[in-house]
Length: 239
Picture (tube, rainbow, N blue to C red):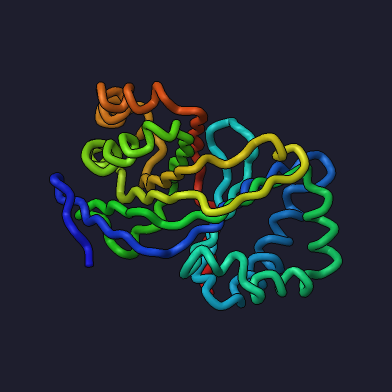
């Protein structure tokens, strides 16, 4: 059952999970070949696993690397370590195995949902939006509670005033692994995925205010690691 934030956002918490995969493609694989492999082999096979609900692919529009991100919405984080999920690897074609082995590296993580905040004007068919802001934060242990309170009591309500913001979802890391060039780039303990209809939100006064309050500055001053990525929806898939 959903609750309401002070600004009228619909607030829900669940035990659903998210698989997040960043791909550093590198020079040995053509993007067209990677896209064909993921779109027509890799992801459709993953969607046959019980508990895998949907998948979404994004491409970076922020000039940062890696360029490609895949997200899988799963019923629980345990789906990612299930026998059925592991079994689909054995079904991969030789082409898929060769392409995934040739990329420079990847960063893979499983997260558990710890709260979603949805704008009252967001329609069911408007999600996912065209753009996402993905924010990873690694707080010091003594600042963890303050980070969570800031999100729940101030930050989401302020972000919701940004034109085009429709939803923010928060996750906590369960497990992760990295390979190749991504081996020294661990994922952060906390992840936030913000859905925006347009790609001009960073310049809006409302966004700048939401990311410059006294509470925000206090929280960010204690971060061990933080990263933010802006990505554009490439393609969605449903089971």
